[in-house]
Amino acid sequence: MHAHLGDRLVVESPSTGVVRRDGEIIGLHHEDGTPPYDVRWSDTDDVTLVFPGPDAHIEHLEAEADDAPSGTGTTGTVGDDTAVPRTSANPGDIGRRVAEERRRRGLSREETARRARISPQYLAYLEEQPSDPATATLFALAAALDTTAASLRGGGVDRPPGQGHALLHPRLNDLDQEECRRLLSTHGVGRVAVTAPDGRPAVVPVNYEVVDDAIVFRTRPGSVPAAAAGNEVAFEVDHVDEAMSQGWSVLAVGPATTVTDPDALRDLARRAHTEPWAGGTRDTWVSVRPTRLTGKRITPADQSARR
Image (cartoon, rainbow, N blue to C red; front, side):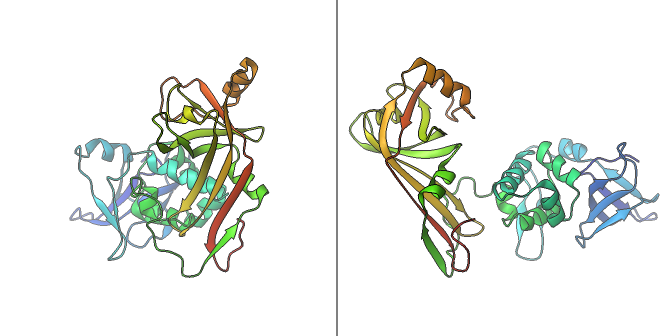
């Protein structure tokens, strides 16, 4: 018997073939995939060390994915009122969302695995390989990361942020300059407010970097973001934590210019962390140097303004 992380161990009645118990293999003790296995049982959510007997067999994750009819799927449930559509995410998407939530909360793989009661090796497998964990494991990971299983599956990816329930006792805090710079720093997606070439106001998202205290982004000549150059503009970046009904925003205001120095352009291209999500050729760099930087954070009343 050989298994991989994420495979299903099924125990059947020797006489009738009826499934008596099944669970997800979340830990291996031998590199060749031979028993014993750490199994999270689907009926109890308990994790036990299992030496499979003759009444057990392995259902491989890859085989289940290959056998599934195109465009169909199942729904996993926990309790009477919680359901997670098994078709709401492509294999691999869950792992990327888990890794992002873990990094955002400053958790190591070991700590996250301990909280979710899975092995660090299995968590690494989920984050790095196409996989679709069992419902119980998905809920355990969601609890470990203070989020929801639906969020890990991307259930709200097309929904505007901020539709969750408001906190009972929210606290709105002003952020100081240091905290604003920290939240704004490195790179991400922000929004630049400009007057478009047709004279109308516009707010557009851009991938940005922070280089030498300046906000820089790439665009195309004649585009709406390019219209920022030569004007004072507003640039905003924020984060909303739907699961916890809290978040922050930072607003930078300052003059924007087009970067033209060849050495500066080469340095920006070298230091860029990501390509613009919009794709295509975008070789015009715009720099915004903030003269005013403000921010707000919403937290529960009993929580510190910083985290």
